[in-house]
Length: 353
Image 1 (cartoon, helix red, strand yellow):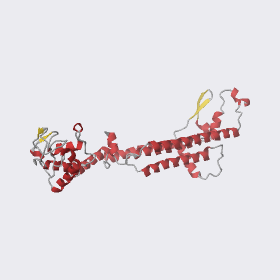
Image 2 (cartoon, rainbow, N blue to C red; image 1 turned 60 degrees about the horizontal axis):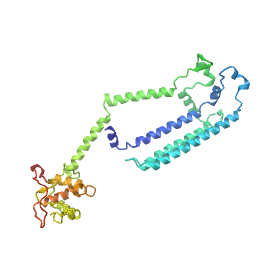
Image 3 (cartoon, rainbow, N blue to C red; image 1 turned 60 degrees about the vertical axis):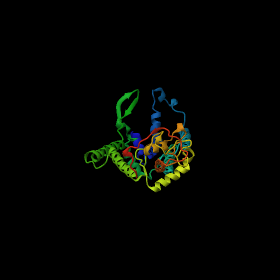
Image 4 (cartoon, helix red, strand yellow; image 1 turned 90 degrees about the vertical axis):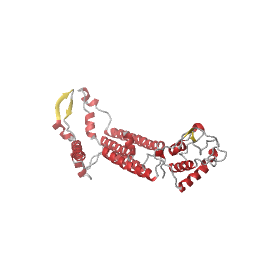
């Protein structure tokens, strides 16, 4: 039920695309952060000896710094090229196999995919700039202000000061750093708490906002009013709301529809050919405007009558049904004998428009 309600909301189909965009942005930032890890720190961790034997000079890594740099460059390029290939293949398969979501312009979808692709390219550019090789930081950083903000938000302790946060626990020479929770994570938590408080005050305390259920009830009420107006104007006609039309313009329109579609089976005067006589008191599927409307709309496949709802709109079916009722008692020549049961029109269903 809730899924059907979501599908009724205009523009709800954009949520999966927006989620995909957020996911790609987060994924790219994560990749950049991984490649921006301090290589000096990583090298120091990799060279920690596990025992006294490994601390000897002859057991050190034989590869030079240049060899490690070349290997890192090659591995990074290979991973990036593989990721670009997989991303392009995914976009191609999605655009070729999926259909356009209902209610979403094609240009909007293309804009979202372009943004995702642009974020991917920007991430790759940052990775190539920051993560390739052992590049030394310039003495004067062009984005020193942003770097200071990043250091404040990240709260990472420099390698030179790691002794200050080194715990006393020692397990086979392996020690642990007492790293604190990054300030950006605490800030994010504080923001979510503030949003939760604002949400509670807005929707539950002061009630200045409307909950989804309240919006749903209001929309259903407005839809009911619009439906009533359409039914009253005759624009919305179904088996329960249909009434007999008696004005000449509607009857003439129904006559033209009858001459075009119904004559081969019921005859030009509705006396019956293959189909039954429509001018007497006997009806196989039931008489009256509602029954006739239902029969024309859904057809009688067992008797060879097709459904006309795909070729005629409800208003046209109402007109031809009203015209058929106007032929009652005309006694056309060579009419077929009565078929079915005698139908008596109820008094409360004789209303006309």
